[in-house]
Length: 483
Ligand SMILES: C=C(O[C@H]1C=CC=C(C(=O)O)[C@@H]1O)C(=O)O
Image (cartoon, helix red, strand yellow):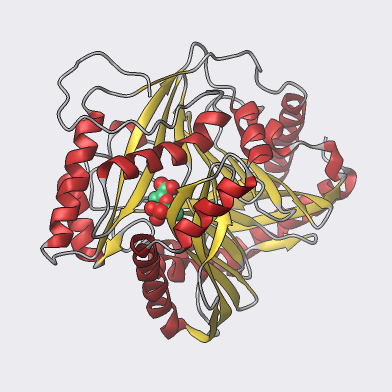
């Protein structure tokens, strides 16, 4: 049962929303919230206990902010190049009219497709070009406090009492499920590389470097996938637990749609906004972690001193600055890149902060920034054209913005890296590398292995060998080869 307190607020919000819907002749979002004891819930287990096929959302930010959303009260879907402005406009209208009873208004979570001009493959069938959803039930933990937020969409004909009872019933069923999280049975993963993958990667990198050599491109980020198969359905709750525990500097996300779950632990902030203050970062240029502090320090120094990685990074910094300038009254950045050390890999990072002009929309600005040259390239159109022709892969939501927004327009969007699409007994893992003049297929290949490790580890694969074996330039074998 909902607490009496929340039940009173919910009925009040539903009634208010119905009056508003009668006045305006459109659907209105009703939201009620009340405090809960934060320690009563474990967010990954709550996510994992969702009934099959119920849409579910998980967001674990780098601070103490996390939330789980279950089911959908309101959703905007958009297709095509204008997807960001369409979603921004839909949210602005809905947020403005929402009827709120309690401290917290509705929170919407969503994601975007990397390139809407590429056809959607079977793999990403449940993930449209852009979706923003307000979950029906959200449990949000922030600053050591917890809130349950219940939302529903109401129109002039909604039977408020029937809706109220249905929400109470649904919530008590979900609370029951929270006590029975998914099985922790070992799903015994196997990771196989498809036989043609390594030569295809070598050919792709060679082609990109040749295109760069001809002066047609400065940088392009190419990506590849590996598949993991499991003897039983992937226990998502344990995977998300492991992602959270192993990646304290990353934001952990999971979006479950139509039975498939897109999840990851990404280190890259695309844009956060709070009361006109924004933050973003350039993250590009990578090297592995050393086995001990000395070796690790030397690897970091090599990365800081690598002309190739500095060029790869500088293009992101310059492009971000140019994209932000028209929208900002103030921008400050780190004077030089620093090392961002993650468990298996370290990156060059330049942080940006400042203030946006009044009226700037978080989602529209996210659309202006995406894709940065950390996942796309320079020049952007030539890089996208290169990827459309030569990258034999549907990126879906990988390398794209995922995040959340509230009714004041504050929120957080990350670039969905170090991620995988989990569907029953199969997971497809994604990783990419920035290529500039001087990039080499073998070392870029090893870099993708380092990037796969985040998800491979969480999915229970203990030893993803990151071997320094040079790739055979031609390979004709047909047997799958373990990595
Ligand atoms: C494209 C990815 O990483 C980006 C972010 C950091 C470093 C990168 C690099 O060094 O290539 C990439 O630009 C990925 O993880 O799939």
